[in-house]
Image (cartoon, rainbow, N blue to C red; front, side):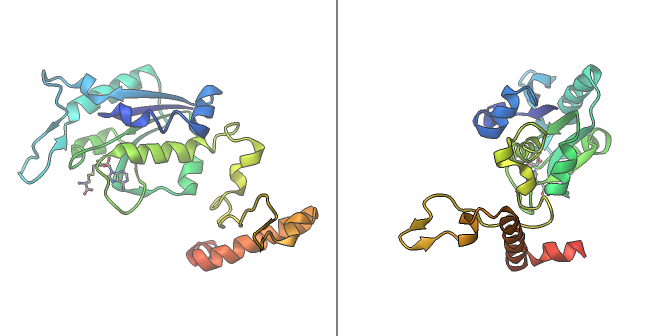
Length: 227
Ligand code: SAH
């Protein structure tokens, strides 16, 4: 998968993309991430990418020209499955959306700033708008990092068996069951006997029951969704 990220702060991505699962996916050649600094596409000598809003009011708006120039250039080089804009009024990111996006070959992610981007970009260049939650961030970079992480770990070959995404929360509309590791007895706090029994089918059953129990307690809305 190739991900092209358009941003005015490529540096923000350095650390989150340099460790753990994303690093592993890059090293294995499963994902190829490219950054495009929007300022490089500014046609103005101060490298501005924003301007005052028509009609007045507070805040600046990201201009259409640099964004359009960058997306046009990328599209000349290859075709894209989706041109995504991270936006608080977009479709809410959930595991289903992440699963779907993880099947794509090439995607562009545009990170907004200030009061947002000129509406004409959204109407003419963006194919999908994604929000990471019902709150407002200062910029789209953190949202793009969350989005990339949620997608990349689902691409086959990225996670080893030991961390398989299939047993994670949401993957089957249930929350994950509790997990334990050594020691079996920590100051009288015990690991459930069943997990030490070696009886695989009973363990699978126990984990399923705990998943349902936890979902009922913490996220009953998820069970209603299945009906
Ligand atoms: N004025 C806009 C908010 C702009 S916030 C509004 O009220 O809707 C600046 C940028 O941060 C946005 O352009 C977007 O790219 C990003 N952003 C903010 N909150 C976000 C969220 N919840 N999900 C995804 N991106 C978000």
